[in-house]
Length: 413
Image 1 (cartoon, rainbow, N blue to C red):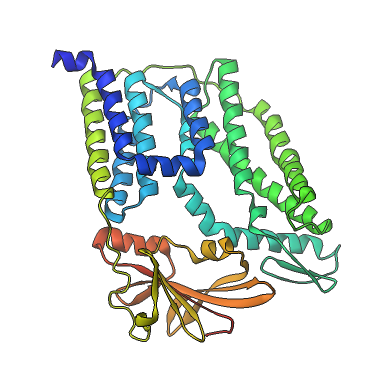
Image 2: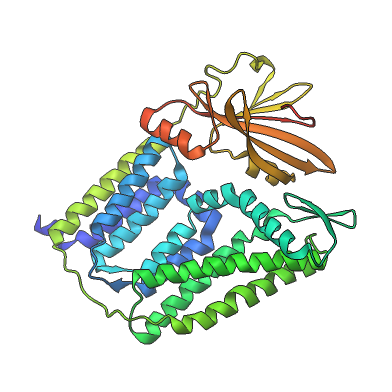
């Protein structure tokens, strides 16, 4: 036992390395999507970590348990990767008693869960911003009408693409803000409290909205919605003038006022909690490696002729009829992301009712042809429009959930 306590740090690090090796596919997938952001967060954690009087053992262990519980039940690899990242933070804190709230926020920012959350809201955010731009410009520019993200000016259609929502600029802005906060802490030899950090993050989000708002206005004024040098230059200038420069100004009013404090935790307690965290992650890692059966076609509506369908992969089943294209997918596949990723431009997105049940409706366009897409989540022959709702059903009741997507060049409803 004395030998274990003597080399506990080396043993804990070795176990962490073994867990990362066991989850190599999940780790490489997570790094591939956000390598720069994750590396930047790690560097921030190392240089910005400070001793705090707030005991982070319980919150970190609780978050790891919650993420791994969901990952275990739903086989969600993105959440499992986030749990692995939090495990590394938990180990670093347990061994050094140092923690960086700024870097911790960055870890969530560059996780796949944030990307998914942003992607699901992109269409709604874009349409809301475009309508705000329409209200601003309609008295100055002869805009005939607006349909979703399409502006009709002098009978010409100007479409704002998804890139104008600036997810990359949003992340870059928050990274710059995190760097400024950490730099200010090291310069003042004091630390920001949690309220100051969250307040500054909230201000950065507002600045990002303002930046995208004026970016869309500028692109419409200059009639430059196609991707070219001018388009990207306008984006960078709006990012600099409406986000970076205001942040450099505002950081002067955010002054850290906390001194570094210590939080002594017994070695026995730290070792015990580390073992619990390692056990939780190990159990989930072994479960994640198992092949998951989705049962997408189980109890499917008999009106679908599955004999004429084909499997695109184990998560997507495709059927083609003379009138419509039908996809049966796992609920992780968002049709809005799939369609925009294939070059379709979303004109309108809303929830409608069919046979006293709510379903999602999307009107989109590609090559000057309009398409109408209807989709919903299905569980126990009931239709849902909320991903969170069906995932909760699957989480607590372990019921099969699928996504049904029907698309046609003519209105089906």
